[in-house]
Figure 1 (cartoon, rainbow, N blue to C red):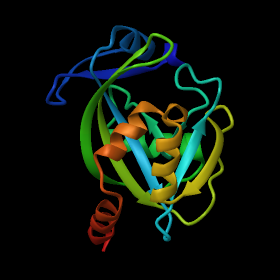
Figure 2 (cartoon, one colour):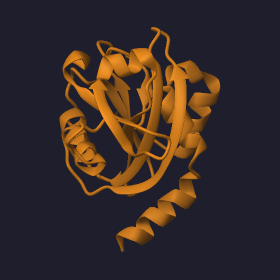
Figure 3 (spheres, rainbow, N blue to C red):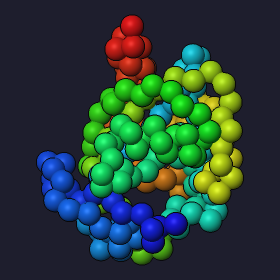
Figure 4 (tube, one colour):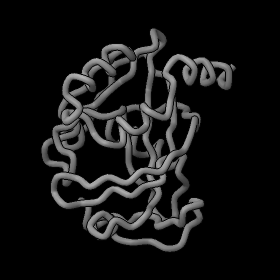
Length: 181
């Protein structure tokens, strides 16, 4: 429930400057810390989720494996692991790959203004998603993802499309594998 969670407000250098109730931060468009998780299988396919229709924003849209906000007293890494388990029903080691900043006005008047920490992980099983969080899921290759976004970009979350612009899929996967070995 957005009214019960607080997000970490940050400056442009990702330094903590305070905390605010999550919905209020999105109403006012205040810059806050977030994370996005991209989970790949050993074949290089990406696990996407379709957000539950009941989500307070971007409900029903396809996006990366998991995303969220660290609580004010929580590290980004701990929050990413927590939300992956809560949303998708599994745990794994994650590696932070890059960070980017974006701002987007959402259809319901909310404003995403986030410094987004992007994590990668690998997983070769099917998820057990929480139905209140995830309406559907699928494994897709890079060409399939980019083709679907090109055909119907409104079916995907803004942050997922922005994150994809910041990564070269094969290069990032190669770097990720090298860091894990």
